[in-house]
Every structure is written in C-alpha cells, then in structure tokens.
Amino acid sequence: MTTIGTLLDPIADKLLISAALISLVQVRVLPGWMAILIIGREFAVSGLRSIAAAEGYTIKASDLGKTKMFSQVVAISCMLLSVRHPSLLLPGKILMWGVIVFALLSAVSYFRKFWHKVDERIKKRRRNELLLLERKRQRASMRQRRRSRGKEGLGGTTIWKPPEVN
Image (cartoon, rainbow, N blue to C red):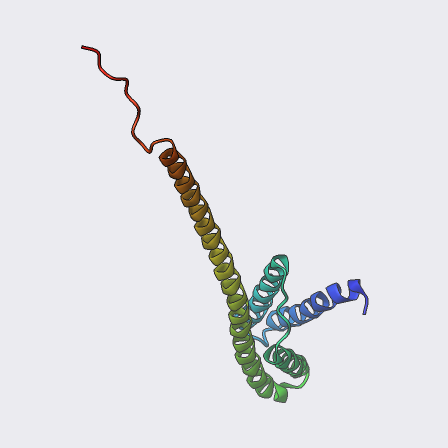
C-alpha cells in the first residue's frame, strides 16, 4: 500500500459510513442520535490518533474497533435494504444497537490506551524535570562547600584587624 493509500483509506471508510448513516437518517429509517453518536466517535478516535501521532506514538486499531467496523457494515447494509424490504427494519435496528455497543466499548478502549501512553509520558517528563532540579541543587551545594573551604584556608570567616594604637 502506498503512503497516500495509508492516509486516505481510513478517511474513505469514515466518509462512506458517515454518508450512509446520514442518508438513513434523511429517509427516517435511523434515529439521528445513533448517527451522531457513531460519527462523533469516529471524530473523537481520529482526533486521539492525530494527537498521539504528534506525540510520536501510534494507537493501532483494536479488535473491538475492527469488530465495530464489521458490525457497522452489516448493520448499515441491512438498514439500507430495509428501505425496500420493510421486514429487515427490525433486524437492522437490532444490529445498529450492536454497533452502538461496539462503538462505545472501542472508544473507551482507545481513550484508555491514549491516556495510558500520555500518562506514562507525563510521568517520565516530570521525573526527568525533578532529576534535573535535584542535580542543579547538588551542584549549587557543591559550589557553596568549595567556597566555604576556600575561605577557611584564608583564615575562615574572620577578618584581620590591625592592632589598636593607644
């Protein structure tokens, strides 16, 4: 697969699914909230993946996400067929409920993976910052000790006074 194919394939899937869902809402076969939930989930997961990529790591598609996509294709196909064959409307709606369940579960899975990676990165960055501060504090302490040793060699902190003349 080419680089452009790698970039456009997920976008094409999302556009195709979104167009089908919006069409089903338009012909009043699918409740609008279901379409909004599924499309919103796609935007959220895409956003997470973009942020993760900007941070230098990837969140791969999970088995839940793949199951969601498969159930989505089957459910949407059934719903599209129900426009001409009303007997498929009930099975299509039941399948759409399955899509909602898989969409929510896979979204939670993606958010957990994302949060775990971000949380680990933040902890590591904070740990490094604390180590750096501790090293600076130790260096300052060492410099202070060297200065005080140098003064001790010159008589410590006492200053020589000339003798008083009567």
